[in-house]
Amino acid sequence: MHNSITQDSSRLLQQEEEAQLVGEAKANPESFAKLYDRYAPNIYRYLLSRLGNVAGAQDVTSQTFLKAFEMFPRYRHTGYFSAWLFAIARSKYVDYLRKTKNRVETIQDSLKDPQEDLLQAVIRSERVAEIKGIIHRLPDEEQELLRLRFVAGLGFAEMASLLGRNEDAVKKTLYRLLDRLQSQLEDSHAAHS
Image 1 (spheres, rainbow, N blue to C red):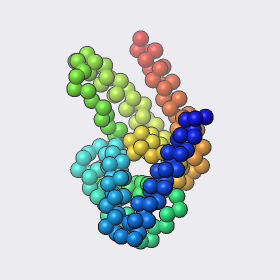
Image 2 (spheres, rainbow, N blue to C red):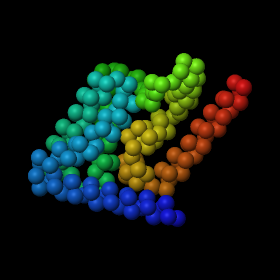
Image 3 (cartoon, helix red, strand yellow):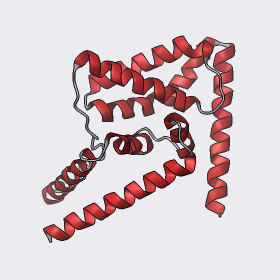
Image 4 (cartoon, one colour):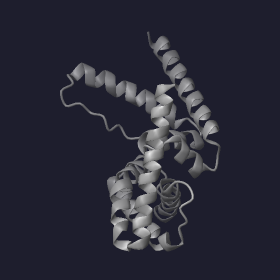
């Protein structure tokens, strides 16, 4: 119960901060830089996970914020600015794929520990390859849920707004997906033992 109240108050505070930043940027376009600073790292990580290459992710991140800046005078803050921004990023991602014909999508492993010994590195590499394989076989919409939550760092309300779905439905879908992934990993480990 306490955790739920803390999450709700944290989400409300984030919404208030976001609304304040949007208001400042509406009054002074130079303040759009604050929105960029806040959201660019998450947009970039999301696009990097989709494209699998740094140059492409940087390019599409730039295109995303350029388009957002161009469209900003018409933006009406009625929900989550981040959901609006991620909708633009997804659109720019599709445009980029059309232009480059590059359809490689990967979920990058960004958690490398330089202190691992060789055996740990091999075991970790095998596990990561196994997880990537399982994720790659998921339908696109399930991969997208994982990217939005764990790569882009979006909250459930933001995801729901972006996807045009109910927040509870997004939560249930993601939790069921995670349970299914865990089962598949356990089954795979049991088969290898």
